[in-house]
Length: 366
Image (cartoon, rainbow, N blue to C red; front, side):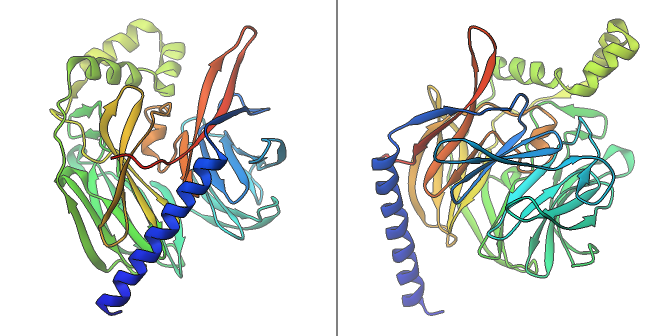
């Protein structure tokens, strides 16, 4: 591709992006709706005119226009298209034009968008997420090493789920004899058969690979270093104590045992927040969430795949998923699709709690 063609492609991409922002700014000045049947969601996805919400081993599919429930996919069991219920590893899903890609701890299942079972693939232990990319898979997994040197790694696997190459590794939240209470998880996304991997331990760095894992380019930007203060550490430690396994430990062995277990651990906190908190793909656009905040809003850098900054935006701070859930792959209470930011909000009512979907157009800010 020539330099002129590249510039023309970037210009067309930017114009489509700006038009979608204008369209949705007129259509959605800000709205909310209640999700029926949801009590403990773990993540959401939006694709075309549908909202997908994961709860345990089930996928709830809603009409995005009025949030009416269209169908529920998945059930507990060991058979084809069924999932073994595992409180510490709920489903993670991705939605494609022709199928839903759902993963549990031990297998990948493909359903039609209507919920009909297509096929399933077994997963090896340690694999958190495995996304198809042409004939291969992009695999996010945990590598347990000697002496407690544990890592998240991102790899290319072939169609038989055999490892081809490692693209990147990053320290796990337990490493050697320490617990990193504010872990910098490994984040990646796929855009047009290209793999974007954020390498925040190096700074504001994103590596772009092709579908075979060949490096195409490195995107690197300046960033503000934001110190981690005592309040942030206290909040992070409180979230760490909410791990479901800890609650089970208290039930089975008692509070005194748990208190002693916590005292024996060595904790480590970063001096500064990671410059990249998460990356998301929307069509051909890359959204990079940063630690910068203004009240209840967070700053995102919006980039194309050449690394050009299209704009900076401030979007609502979404509710965080549980400590362990946030490191199992791209499980979030928010997503961006078609130039619209969607997030779930837990609302206390007079009688109960309910989950609401909020959405707003991504508007340009200076």
